Image 1 (tube, rainbow, N blue to C red):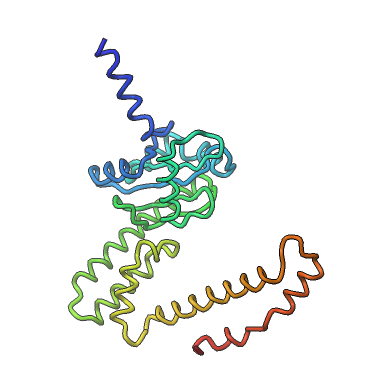
Image 2: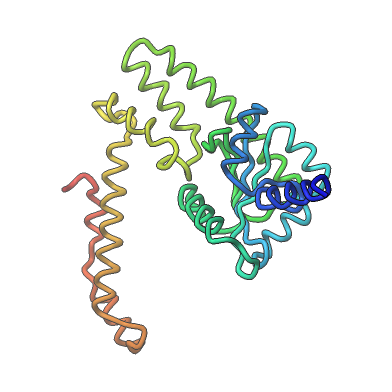
Length: 255
């Protein structure tokens, strides 16, 4: 009897971590497997029961045996689902929500190629045919190799100037969408070493902060002037009355 029950218990324990087509569904389990097998992660952020491009990508590419055979040479496959009708435990919902925030996911499907720790080195957003997905995967692997080469140059740098130059190469290769959350240490060290701001990172941060403030000012202004029930004519008048701040952006160096 015990021998008959054990396989059932084991299957029930494994089910939450394994998607229907062999994709893992738990980040910790995927990281562990990737580290043990010295592979990377291919992370799929999907809305499996409502997102049409997600369903097409999965049906036409991600579940195909030939694609999975090729992908598994270098990647552990991880599906993070955000369904609307399918049941999920509160723990899975919370964990997936946190990961979506960490990776800055704003639309589905989003595919992230990352190392075993979860640090991205490539990815794409939206549905794509098999050829494009394969190309994106190969481009990401090439980018990881390039990153490893320049990271080795960082380790060998003997002066602050040489280190800053090498770090800047890392920064250039880092996927733009993941710089702040995953390469923030690189950016911070460049700014620290680059006292004359030859990289332009300090100036870029100042401009970004000003733009963010401007957006908030606009939002606060419009919130104070109109509501959902405000007539169109009044809304248009309020928009036209907003102060002209184009001179602010013509002189980004002015405080």
